[in-house]
Length: 411
Image: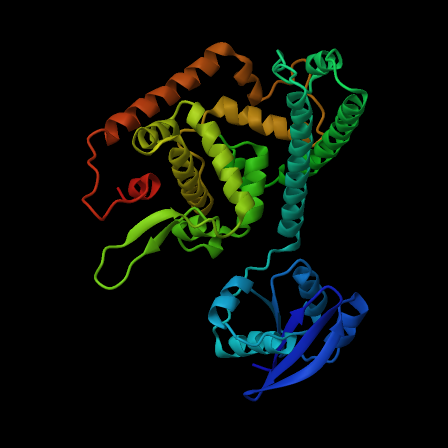
């Protein structure tokens, strides 16, 4: 191996330290511009390795420097801090720590996604930002109405056509009414942005077999499936389902010392928070649809409450995603008509033309009540069979209690 170059990157510059022949040598600063990084890259050799921490502009450094060196390694900043904590902290020391850990083989690396996965992650993140902004605007409107003792809206959607008509009839001060009108215009603009992002996400996912495979799971829609595939990337980098569960922060915290029993606490919430939120969202949807996942939710809810049950189902969904993607198989209890309807909705969202006349596809079966009811009945039977199968299970002894999902997987 050639030299190891540690770079402590900031917004406008990067501090550089070389590790060579067992010694560290500071090399000054490099401008964080494309021309500055390319000029620095031309001074390196194909045997060198560059190490940076995962920051907002780390992927740009990877893309620019990769053609000039053997490899650009992205380190996990939290784990680096835990391994190499120093009382004195400077940019030179941070860059030297990165180079030394890489040379010693102790650097905690971060998986670098390919260009397609990185683009999907950006789309999913931007959609999440728009949704959160829209929620904040809606909450501001509700706060104005509550401050002036306006009764709850009698319509299901305050921001729909009927809701807005009702909202215009309420007695409010002029400044508050102007604020509400401004918020409504903002909601319309955010709605247009959301449509564009949804179309881009659908176009990126329409030919992805992994997304279609995850759509077979009860409670998983296009946004959840595309978000999980973007977060997971190459599923082969997770040797077991437990690794994926830990990656999304759904693994329980464990405390154990000496000969004492291990204590399992709340979930760690480390890792990709947005993927964890998507799994919890899908868990709530699965808890309302007939099937084994609903039976599992009801079983855990009876003992631990609905919040813990939702997290347990989310963990089970993470395990299920790993199993389906690694084994290239669909969900066993998938409802074919419902899955076809999800796929067709994704195609329409991506901009494909609508089918008319005799151009009926498999999604049409979802509109036939008899076929839809038949699939629902099969799912109910699977739910009952699961409930009967686990009905005789007994809880573990004292000190060995685990969360519902962890206990479930080991049986």
